[in-house]
Length: 259
Ligand code: DC
Image (cartoon, rainbow, N blue to C red; front, side, top):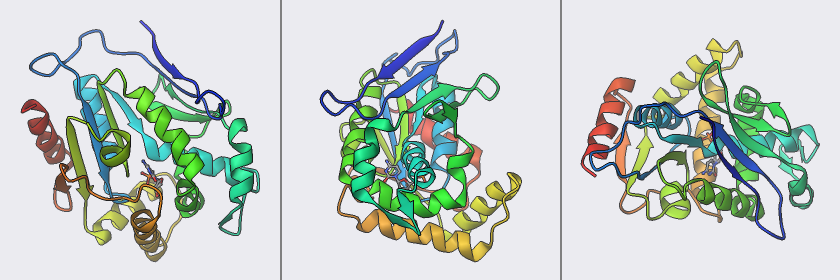
């Protein structure tokens, strides 16, 4: 069975179409009561939020949405269309171009992940390049971009059964989420993990460059005017500096089981 959660932009300012196409497993693993919840995972850059969120979603047969990928795809569009030049975002041009940007998630039949697509092209790999990481924060700080993406994210979560990771999920997108987790890890450990990830993809990067990009993005995300990164009051902190992936999953699943 093919299920679609296909969402169109807001009336009057239709700008970005987000479409998730996924094939659910036949046998559903539910929570004890069978109820579906929203799991919001926020936190610092490169601390493995998406890895944990994706696996939790897989185990619960929930949808996983990496909201950072949405901001990255918009950034990629800006880079390709000279809306970002020398690291500076032309905000007026970005806003004027929003109706030309189509960003959507589509199931990859080989990896079974929901890859991000930009105007008909799978950009899942390209959005992870350092060039995009270095420009995404100012794009994510533009109010019109945030308003639009947040509305679409809220639409995606209406049916619950979703694990969403980002920077403002527990505070702005789903302040009523049943489970909120705020993930962090020591900067050196985050930098090393990111290097391992990029090196595995064949990208040549320096430790200092990666570490400073991570810290710079944290600083930018925490100090921006629009929806700054902060822990929701009712979020539970997960510092995974010295935890394996399996330990993190077990930790989260225990919390889910208590709901
Ligand atoms: O999770 P990530 O590193 O792929 O996110 C890329 C950038 O997007 C990050 O530097 C901040 C921004 N972002 C955001 O502002 N709000 C979100 N919900 C998700 C990401």
